[in-house]
Image 1 (cartoon, rainbow, N blue to C red):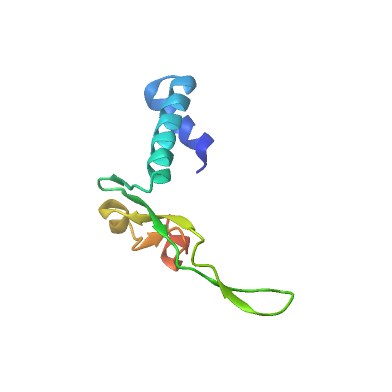
Image 2: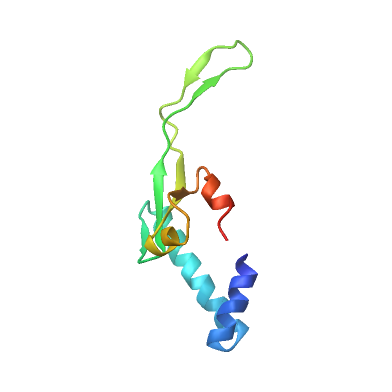
Length: 107
């Protein structure tokens, strides 16, 4: 399901596609703003969206092959932890940085 499909499903409930588009857009904007502030969004029974800081990675300078570690680089990634209702449907764990084998078979 993509954003357009979600808007169509919400339109069946709220009546018009314009209202559905506004509602879905508002939800996504709210989640995005909270994650940009490094907060988390928890939806009871569904799951939690979180932001986590990645560890510094070791790189290599291609000109002289020297290894370097950039500790100053702030790299954040968003993750989703499935809630109770999704876990009871067969998915256990995280979706985000790495997709688990369980999620690939989840329908």
